[in-house]
Amino acid sequence: MGTKKTGLTREQHEQLGLELQTIRDRMQIIGSDLTANYNQKDKVAGIAHKISDDLEKLRHQLEELLFKEHPESTTETYYRATRDDFIRDPAPIRPYPQE
Image (tube, rainbow, N blue to C red):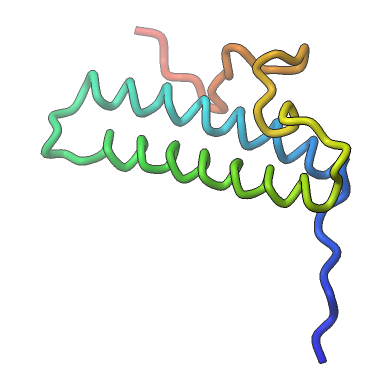
C-alpha cells in the first residue's frame, strides 16, 4: 500500500509561486527577443512561448491544489501582480552582452 503524499505547505506554495512567476515572466521576455531576431521557420520563439504557456498551466494547476490543501489561501500566491514582492522586471540569470 502506497504512502499518502501530503502536498506542499503554504510556505512552499508561496516560494514556488514566486519562482514560477519569475521564470514565466522571464520566458516571455526571451520569447519576444527570439521573435524579434529569428524567422518563424526557426521555431525557437514558438518553443519559448510554449514553455511560457506550459508554466502558466502549471501555475493554474498548483493554485487549484493550493486551495484544496489550504482553503484560506488567496489567488495572490501564484498570481501576485498586486503584491509587493511581485518582480516587475525579472533580471536574466545571464544577462545578454552589452552591444
